[in-house]
Structure formats: C-alpha cells, structure tokens
Length: 143
Length: 357
Image: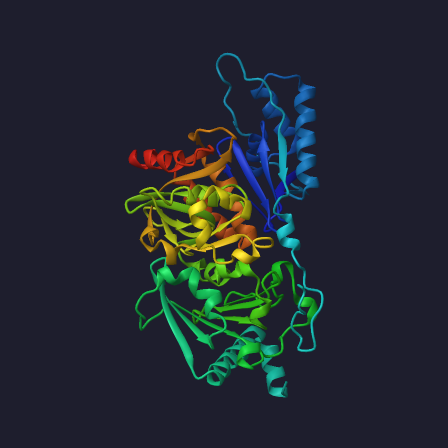
C-alpha cells in the first residue's frame, strides 16, 4: 500500500475550509489547491491511500468513476512532481466518513487542481555569491 | 588566525566569529572617537543603535527617526553598526569557506539556535544576531556599496530574527489607520501598497508604513509602524504632485524609486501603531470608483505570506504560523482601488467606522 506524507520541512501549508496554500521554502514557489483539491489534501493528510481517496470522492460527488479516478490520479501526480508530497509504503488509515452522504442531489465533481505561482522564485536566486576578494569577503558585484 | 582561534572555531564557530566581529566593532568605535548611541521604541520595545563613526547614520536613521525615544537602561536589542572603509577597521576574516554562502546569503553552519548570520548579497551587508545576548552586528565593507533601497528599510533582517521569540512579525505590507483601529494593505511589490497608503495622506487616516510594518498577534492583533519612508515609482509620482518637492533623490529617478521621508515632512501624520481591524488586498480595476469586496483569510494569507517569507532571510514555519494567526483573527477584503484616489481613504474610513466588519 502507498500512502503520502507532506514533504516537510521545506513545504509549509495552511488549510482554510475549502482552500489550501502550500509554500516551498527552498524554491520560492507557492501553490493554491483548487476544485476538490482541499478535500483530497485533507484525506491524504489523514493517511488515506490513492484508492481510498478516489472511493470517498466518488461517493460524495456526481461524476463518472473514471472521471473521478483520472482527476485524483492527475492531482496526486502533480503534487508528487512538485515535491509537495512524498509517497511511502504504509498502511492506509481506516476509511473515514470524510463527507457524510448528503441528502438530496450530490454536487457535481470538480477535479482537484493546483495553481502554481513562481513570482517569488527570483528572490531566492538574487545575486548569488560566487566570488570572494583577497579578504575572504564577497567581492563587489554591482557597478 | 592563531592556533587557539582555530581550535575555538572548531568548538563553536559562530560564537567565536561573533566575538571577533564585535571586537572589530569596538575597535572601529575607538578609531572614530567612541560610540554614537541612538534609542528607539520598536513595536513597544526599547532598541539601542550603536554606531561607529558617522558614515552609516544617514543610511539608517532617517527611516526610523519617528520611533526615537529616550535611551532605556535595559534595551531589549542592541545593534552595533560599522563599516570598514570609513572607520579604517577591517572585519575579521570570515569563519567559513567561500562555498558556505547559500540562498539569500545565509551562511551554512552559522545559523544555529543561538546565532543568525547572513551576508545579504543584495545590499552587501553582513547581519549577525546573538539571540542569547540580544546583540546584533550590522557590518558593511563600504557605505558606497550599499544600494539606495536599504535606507528605506534598514535592519529589517535583524529585526525579523529578533522578533522570532516574540509575538511579533515584520510584514511586507502597508498600514493606515486611526488611534483606535486601522488596516493592513497587503500584497507583493507593485500591488499598490504605496499608492493606497499615500492616497490617505491628506485624509484623517494616519500613516504607519507603505512597505514594512510589524504585526503583533497579541490580543487584540496590533500593527506597529517600523519605517517612516514612502517609495513610489517615478511615473506614479505624477499622481501625487504635492510630494514631488519632498523627494529625497530627485536626480536619480531614472534608476531609483522616489523616496520620501514622511517623518520629516509630515510628522503629524505618522502613528506608532493601532489595533488591526481589517486586512485589505488591493486589486487594480481600472475603474474610477473604489469598493471593498469581502474575502476569506486565504486571500490575506496569499497576499502577505509569500512576499513576507521570501523577502526575509530565515523566515519559515514560525513566521508562517504568526501570519496565519493574524489572518485568522482579522476580516479580509479585496480593496478594488479606483482611479479617483480620494475615494480610497473614504472607503477605508467607512470600514473603520463600522469596526472593520
């Protein structure tokens, strides 16, 4: 079985209801989880594996099983590619009642997605120190 | 380096280097006829600046002179400032190899539970803080190497480190308000912080800052003024024609933002702080009118967290927790700022008259 862990300490995050912001302190990038992204994040934080996440979302939303499955797969792969989470062998947590069955019509499934922001990355790359002068201190690097 | 020094460095390199650096500061003071002391109250805490020689005074003092206060016998933080060129006093040789400089100039092995050490490549200044003694050193190889913008927010790195164990956090944000309450103007560079805050200059609203202020997560949340400067892109200056004659660098606007020391020209308009009633995230609409649109805490956190964390060396999980605590307890609005600047302070005053809700 494969479960997921947040890639700390370089990744910090905060969830507010249906939104999550994640920040990569090493690279200067940050992310916002959209659609059902916050729900998937809550499930993987709670120790759910891929199959369990898909099962719970499929039960909570209107949508073809393939659509839910593909959306969750793509989202988890994006989280992994961005280094926000890591996959590890482990025992998934018992399936929780993440979303009680709603009375009446279920909401339409919105695929989880990630918005990536890179406007701060340059700050971390600013004027890297490569050269030192004869005193051992950084050489003057501006005209 | 003597053998004894080499052995000590092996034992506790940051402590030994800090002592050598502090010794250099003391020698610089002797070379310049003694220390020059200036006292300030920063976020309610007494701070003492100790200068060796006059060269750095004009780089540091103008931005914070509105916070000046009588010297306290028990300063909560002392910062020792010197440069080598004008004092004729070199800094000790770095206690680290040339490849020890990391992102934003953080020096590998010299950032510990007790010490913070950064050679900021953007401003060519070494910042080092001994948290145990609340003693910091701010060293420049030469004042000529310090860029113009440092004088608009000097020592922000040291202050950020020093606030780590306190319920305080420098915020990359502007702030305006009244004695009984005010607002943060949050957003990255270019988001409209300066335009919004300066639009309030001729209203009843008072000015706490346009770029960096200090947030307190005490109850109630509070905002403190830190720098009494304002910065404007040169082409934005035409929207504030009354500020034109007050610009401190009018001959360099082709390469620099216009810098105005508001503490000198409008001392009655600066305020030391106020309870935080709301956080506003400016959005440029291109429309004439200004309005507020309610938003959630995530809008505040997006507006304030990345830009604060990535501008301050060493800012990470702890600073993020403070920012989260602040936005969690404070209503957020998008400030859709219109071209009719008069409406901006009117809108903010209206919000404050309702207690920020």
